[in-house]
Length: 304
Ligand SMILES: Cc1cc2nc3c(=O)[nH]c(=O)nc-3n(C[C@H](O)[C@H](O)[C@H](O)COP(=O)(O)OP(=O)(O)OC[C@H]3O[C@@H](n4cnc5c(N)ncnc54)[C@H](O)[C@@H]3O)c2cc1C
Image (cartoon, rainbow, N blue to C red; front, side, top):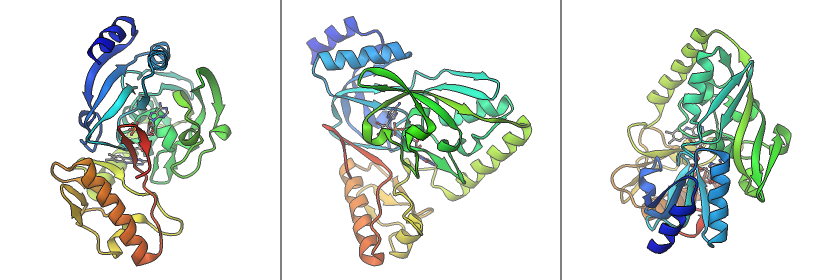
């Protein structure tokens, strides 16, 4: 790997690092090293990183802010392309053009200060625009599908514009989760409002988060998707699993919908706890919960 890394460093257009610890890049604070990390700043640099991976037979994986991701303790045997430096934003009237790596919270702040409403719900979601679109992130009756007009994606090496309808958004789902498209940029269509009112709404939502969610511990947000006609937290609570733990991983006592890294949890602790909660809830209620969190194994994404 040393020799390959040296060669790649010479040809890569973007910053490149060896053995990037995924525990430093995920909000769970779990995960071993990926062999190589690319940190592109532009679409061109990102395409170049992907080309390099393809030509050198390296597995590649794209990561936004790692806020919906459980990475394995063994890390990832390949290259992770981190979009965190692709964070430009441009406002043109009521349209906002944001690069994939832009954080959703800073984005909602920026547009709010410019007097554009529609993204207040995203204030407090620690993900990126790309990860948010792929997951159709949402909260408090808002979700990105309501404000995304279109996005630009990389599909089989080609840049393609995808309309909102083509993205096939539904609850915590987009077409990109299945077709492997890489989101490069999104265009949001917002409306005018007073920056003070927007700010007030954002602060209210942030306060609700602080009151209800265990933000004092590392987590990846809601562990499971909301099942039809119920709430994951309610089912987990009713199954008596609040506070239930495996090693350092625990169902939050404050909010049963969150699984937290209480102290030094391993990826194995997490996987076991996720599966145990799913099985016990199913036994208790007959409803099988579906994890919202994605799992990155050393070979790529796998089901939890
Ligand atoms: C404290 C906390 C609170 C949260 N609250 C909410 C909430 O209210 N609502 C909500 O919906 N979520 C919430 N989340 C979860 C998370 O923030 C969202 O799912 C977010 O959209 C994930 O974005 P990310 O950039 O971190 O994605 P990552 O975790 O980096 O990646 C998630 C998935 O998206 C893929 N991906 C990332 N970037 C791209 C790209 N550019 N193109 C293609 N695929 C890509 C990854 O490969 C992976 O499959 C919360 C998380 C935490 C820790």
